[in-house]
Image: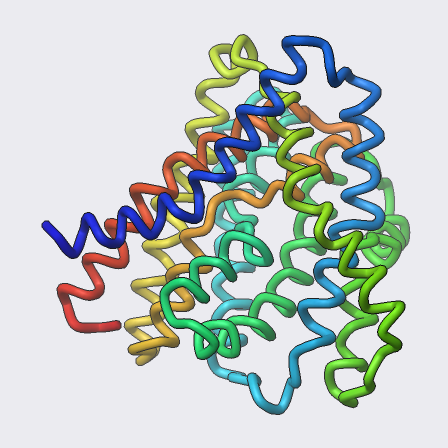
Length: 316
């Protein structure tokens, strides 16, 4: 029991501040200090500048040759694609209206790797966890963004041809930030200090601004109306996906820090970027915000249970 309480306290130390900022967004909207115009502009700033800067810097500062784990990365990419395909199949049969399917599928498979996932890994394993997770996060984040653009475009009928869909993927700011960072990381180029510091200022905006906008967009009336769709995403994200990654990882022979990092990243709640992207593409932003909030709450318990179980089995 004490081990579980220790892990629960660790999880709350990461997720607790996130809920404080979400609650602040709710309160600021109620007292009129933020409005729909603030949410719209703030979401665009995060999507187009702040989050791409965060992803760029996190990868550019990591030496690929020191952190490459091809087996772990290949498993993460493969399991992510399989999860997405399964969720697409299930959503087509259970999620209504059809326009919300992309938001639900994205919310169910897209983990908050770059912020909460990395925080989990660093808190659990220190710099070793960061080194193991960094390139994995960068590559899988590219996959997340590609699949998110596809699923949202399909459900919202935003793209009528493969060429237009590919153009949407290629011009996605998050993907651009990651792709630009890869050669910097591989070559070890030292970027100018003024560029790094300016990028860091933008990167530091990401989590607080995204969470404020997410909190202000929470709609508890729509939560009641969309309860079935929200529950689908929450159960998928916090139960089915971690179980798939844990079972698959054990079957493929991953143990210790590799299995722990894999599970922690899979157990991270839905990324706040999913709300930002859904809103930017004209999807059901209130549903996306509710999924982010509820998966963040659920992650506090499910991550603790999963880590405690694997520790009890002496697998990590």
